[in-house]
Image (cartoon, rainbow, N blue to C red):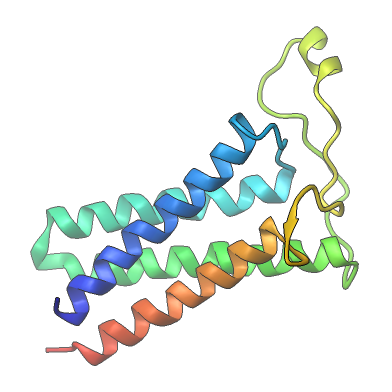
Length: 151
């Protein structure tokens, strides 16, 4: 598989997996996202659309793949910031989320989610930390593949 085709595939698979994992942890695992968790999801959604467009428009594939990679990197950078807030390296935002447009009764049943508290971790790394590691790693891999396969 040529480098640009592999880059395009990574640009699609990584955000689908990360966004799918986030949504799965929310709707299947019962973990409620904080505001910064939502911030990390939007760039992955954009990356999915851009990478899908790269498959649909071969003439613009490299540009769209590069843009998808940039969106993945943005999510990773937000993940670094969020993980730093969770660890206490810096101050985060002061608002918390309870999720979407809810009635007062529904709102009272949803737990308050703080951005500076880790809800889940693996090997001492939070979900925000894993998002940062995987997203920035994918950005580096996609970038290297695109550079190496320049026409």
